[in-house]
Length: 343
Ligand SMILES: NC(=O)c1ccc[n+]([C@@H]2O[C@H](COP(=O)([O-])OP(=O)(O)OC[C@H]3O[C@@H](n4cnc5c(N)ncnc54)[C@H](O)[C@@H]3O)[C@@H](O)[C@H]2O)c1
Image (cartoon, rainbow, N blue to C red; front, side):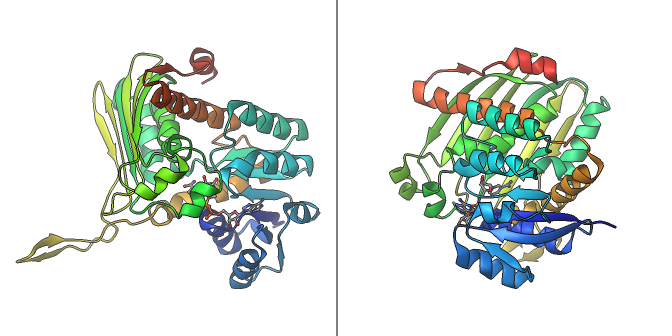
């Protein structure tokens, strides 16, 4: 079997996980090199994973002929330039969310990949989670009837390090709620037409210096009349809590769990069990499925499950939520009718 040569760009929290998966759990891929501006970090991860090549410049990785595909996990504000450079070098791309921080940026990234005839897949990994994937199958089979209400909660146990805010990750809506926005349009098989958002810096006062919210609530109206609500919180303290509900005209689906291990302690102090504590734990299987699918898509030339258009639609909702907070008013999502016809 010919293996696909892959490079990983950015080896922080997310890039490291992609590198670990590619190194040992994706038989059809060969992880060849890592690149990170922090050369020490790139070398450390390369040593741990026994990867021969590590660079502090993305260009050096892209020059390698034996690398046919890259995973981009650098800070979000750098995604667009990384996609453009990788596409120009003829590399297929799995890019972490968000694809870019503006709609023009997303369009430029999509254009770059299209012009270079390389595959562009986006890292909305929840679509690869078995429970979310099973929910979509049931919805598509008509089991819940017409979807009426979408609700989704995304709470981190602890906020990301302050360096994350400095790196240009986008607002809470662009960085975190965007997963919920992608789920909303995917599971409701509809586009979001209008949002009304509220946000505040309520749980982590240290985030205020970056002008960022750590808590957000967004009401949604879909093109075909359904309604929804998305909550995002940077610090729950009790665990990583991802919970989604789709209420249909015939049935309701609930996706999510808090308990990591099937062990419950019952004593005079009460009932206790452990709690999922991190996205790398809750979505471990999804990240692996995602990168395996990327490698398979490159090998077969198949259209990715999560495309540049999906990145654009989710970003449009996130940008509308940002604007809604700023203006303290409901905001229509750009181009929703046109996008609905593209589904
Ligand atoms: N899909 C998910 O569930 C998920 C979860 C977390 C993060 N992410 C995304 O992954 C990306 C990285 O997030 P993170 O949490 O891993 O951040 P991080 O800060 O932990 O890691 C970013 C890494 O990129 C490196 N870097 C900075 N500039 C670079 C450059 N020019 N070239 C190469 N590397 C560079 C940094 O040194 C750092 O090692 C973000 O876009 C974020 O939105 C996705």
